Image (cartoon, rainbow, N blue to C red; front, top):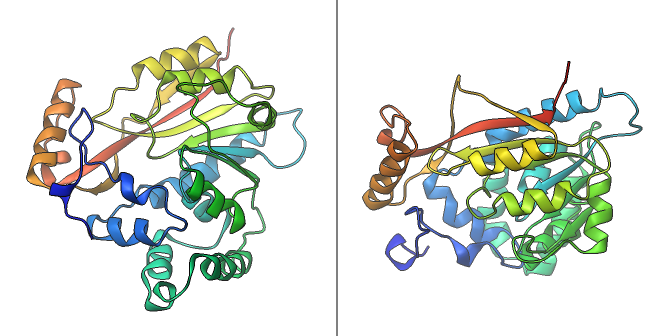
Length: 278
């Protein structure tokens, strides 16, 4: 595994793992993040499932709710949402000696069967959006995503195919992308929406979310932040990353004591839904 001193950092001081995000398969991703106990997708799966089921109760829609997962990477959120699996299961699956011995093509073939045999009866269509073309192709080939788009909405408008996909979307989810994507991506997506779209986002306490909330409001969505708790993301890679995170949290007006000061990134859950006017 590459050590932290060989990696770059974001402007906020967060370590970048760019070398693992666009491989032909997720093995390097899980091997690299395992020592840091990356865990936010595990926290998110129950929240996303609950929010999806609430969204399905809106009158007028037919069939299951289509989910659009932002910064979907290798389809991990889709794997947990639609299959009887935990994140620990995925770590074991992709870091095993058996997995290491396979070619990428052999791994994809094995994963098709692996996921198909664990498919939940309440599985829902999932569309993936991410810059990483190799990662999204893997998720599509393995059967985790129904559609995958490797597009940069920060710089370019969505393709006609993505516009059509968003028009069928009822829930947008994101666990690790805020800070890499901005209000521009949300603005572009919501311009394409045709159904009532809810947004469920886990956002690091080190990353501002206010501009995105304003953009969502401009599209008729009210955002509620769960201030009752936080959700851990991963361990810090170094004392420098911990120090930078504590500084960013304080700048945001939050108290790091008992949270980032203990050695992990923490996120808050933001849920956005259509405004109710009286």
